[in-house]
Image 1 (cartoon, rainbow, N blue to C red):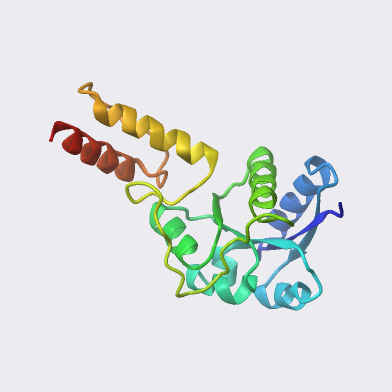
Image 2 (image 1 turned 180 degrees about the vertical axis):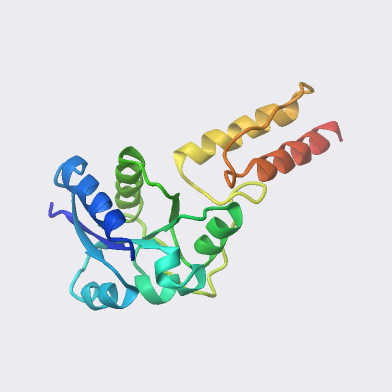
Length: 193
């Protein structure tokens, strides 16, 4: 099976080299990186690639609303140096299939690319096409995500909500603590009747 092209769009030359280096060193030949400093450069390259994944920095492409014009319907991982839940949701609504906050670790990048190929690769169900009019169907209590990891989170929230034990919700800024707290509260309210 030929390697999947990964189009990295980031104005920061250090970040482009870093991500391309991770893909070359840790991708085990499954991916080949193509790095671009602008959305325009990447658009020209997209035409010749049948199967590809776009890794687009939101600050470089002009924000979440610009994703659909950049990815041409290909599976897209949005990145941002200013991550927040609001930015991630806006990116998903604009067609991104995934979101990674910067700085991006090697393991996280390879895991997300591998998951993207598993979900959207050949002979798999098609990934949603990027479109500004795309309406994201939330999977659970306002969360966006259908991965196995997210289903574990949903199951944990359901279990916690059924309990009367106090809960201390922690995590990095933008990781969804408020959404998790609201889901726990809503689940507890329904369980209490």
